[in-house]
Amino acid sequence: MPEDPQASKIRISFDNLSKNAASLNAATDEMNSSVRKLEAALAKLNLGITSWAKYTDWGEPPYEGADYIGYTKWGDKWCVCIRQLTQDYTNPDPDEQDTEKVWAFTDAPRHMRIAAVPHLHKMIEKLNEDAAKTWQEIAEKAAEAETFAEQIVKIADATAPKKAGAK
Image 1 (cartoon, one colour):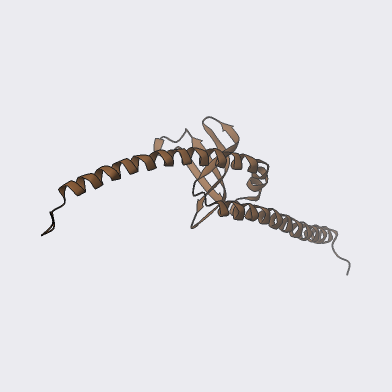
Image 2: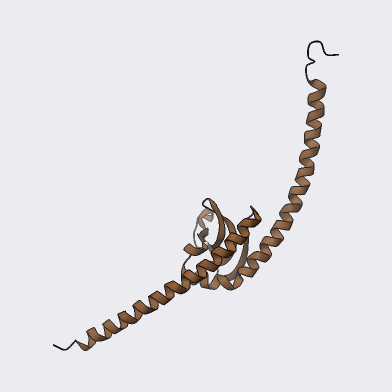
């Protein structure tokens, strides 16, 4: 018995979908692998800072948002992430107007990963800027902490009880 023409079209279409799915998954794996290499290189720097670079704004009030690519601690490891911030000004509760979603790059929706990849350089530029700023802040605070510690040591030395037999 000949195959129903509609069933034949569906079979061919599904066979093509299966082939396209394999290609899609292979390309996605390749893209994710590249980002993992970037993460490994960044991990060697031991930055310990979070940076986000905005790469798109979308929508119009009362509902709008922005997408970011960044480097942050996600779970227990530092990795490249995608963040989406949305504002819904129709919500009467001001505390619930802003929403944030964050995904590790490899867990983000594919369309967001595709959109983010061309902006990886912005993330590196922002990390560099934030690292320099953080370094300066730490240097200032280290000096402040040293001054405080020296004062406490002087006070402790002046007020410490004298040991028996000490002159």
